[in-house]
Length: 122
Image (cartoon, rainbow, N blue to C red; front, top):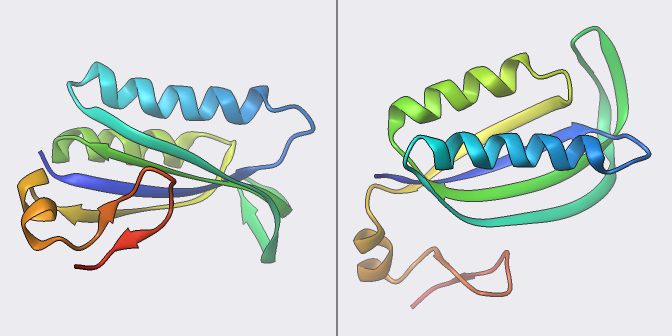
């Protein structure tokens, strides 16, 4: 299974139950289809670089978060469909880090460290 990283900007709500539900829904979708969620990071609430429109609403503040996961390409397509339809999502993108975990370990680059967002270049 390929290894992916998803970066997501979600609509900001005063309570975290909305973003918690979105992250839980995304992670459970991957787990239910046989994938593995490796790490979920919250990057906090930030003002957006420009006013963004999604689902008929304008947003100036968003909650940023990332998720590292392994899954089949078919599951990635259905995840993109869920993100596209969810009104809590402003923007998202998915990057393919490697085709197999062995590729990351062998090359020694783009290795995910335990503290979060850094990569190790050997």
